[in-house]
Length: 512
Image (cartoon, rainbow, N blue to C red; front, side, top):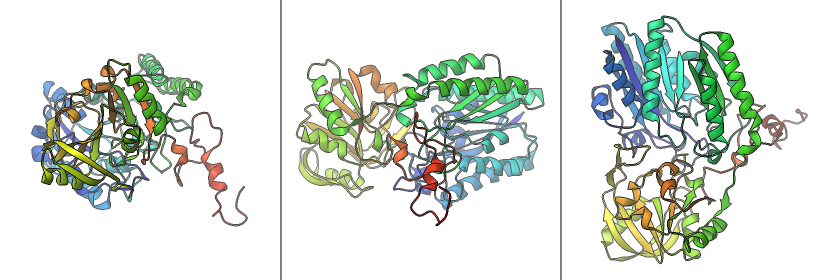
């Protein structure tokens, strides 16, 4: 049995200030760099990638793996035309070569589900379309998705089965990779597709309310598990609410032996989610209030207070270099505080040039928004930014953030790096000599993923809204292309089409 395996993962923020180019896939941070077919099997071995587990599952059942290539880049703005075409061409060319050597029994694609490129708003759907154009529609195709994907009807119609992760933070990627490959092997053995039902929901969920560790999403996922007991797979994606195209939002794809079974499961889950809509209105504090609360709690706590700098989350399209939260920590003299990572290669190199123990004055951060922070501090430690992740999400994955530095500014320390990465792993602090559990306040540039590794050591978690593109309230973004029926906030009855009609630039005499 021959199974082709490939991967192309990116989470694209339509309004992020920095596009995602070819180099970003070569130097991703936190996962292996771009793997061509010849290096893919060795390059993914031992990592947390879904494809790694899928390969192990398939080979354990005697299948031959045909590698198509695999790549990932940190979330940012839309993928450039050059990067999308080069990577897609690599995958399709490898697929074509594989078919010249003999028939394929199945195809497995490790995807994210929220990629937007300059030419293709449903970029994963386009990758799948190209794969189908070469392989045909008779070869079974299974894909994995991140749960905050925008799962589109095109994806659902092109795949034989879609298996999203069940957790956010994503601590089950290996389990999902194994499950997806197992379902692909079942599909190959049965010789015909399952029945599928697809549903789209009509409101956006803020990223901060999508965490499966807390309510309401914890309850929704428990209900999803109950409903799945009687069918093959119940794929639920929460939506990535920063992608400006009609497919943005929550979606469900149910797979079952019968159309009636798939329809019943999809409808039941959609009804359950709609019934809990108001619970998705989450609490986020403005930075001054968040820092004040953290200082107050830390003064009597035995464990760190963790502050999430949610709007500059590199895992959602932020550049990891805005300074609003840092400025507030300094202004309120937050003793024993540390923040990571500040993505500023120029500042990191300046610290290296000055040396450990030196006092430096820097225009720190602000490269993406033009608002750096003037600081003077002491260089406490320098590093090369190379380490191995140890947390639940990425254990075993390599990280290379380039020249790094630990800078002390009064009672606040900053971990400065040369490449962006979300702070979902304590090793991001430890690699530069900071033990997170020993700090009073730990500030992380992350929205949700940090919870898997940091919530267990935290006295409490405070979510802060400081400047950054990963806005806590997506309704504030200048969308132009959502579905007309989409509502931008849970509990808000106003629909996107209403806002479109009210635009001041609408043609004279247009609809009201």
